[in-house]
Length: 118
Image (tube, rainbow, N blue to C red):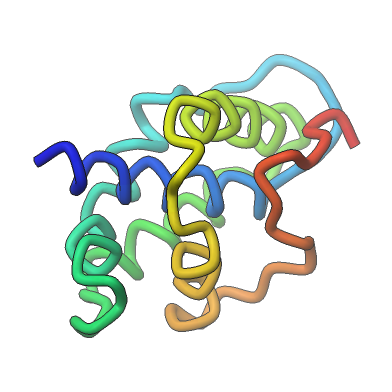
């Protein structure tokens, strides 16, 4: 169970880094981010041997669509960076592959040390 949570958080971190932007007040909460991406945990827990579920891709797409404003993107980024710091041994490479496999184009380098203020 701990491994599942570890992988889920890694996924959240990577996907949050996708929506990085400058400051303001955000409407998206860490709870919403977590709920959107929890369906991806099985894929991450399997080490990528299982196919990505439609629920996972729906969560990725929904989060990407919801985080259109600068404050929302920054909030998602900061939330997921906090999670990444709690799970430094996560497989960020595997998590980074999820958006592309779900058809979500991410124009940023996925890196847990990214500066969310930019």
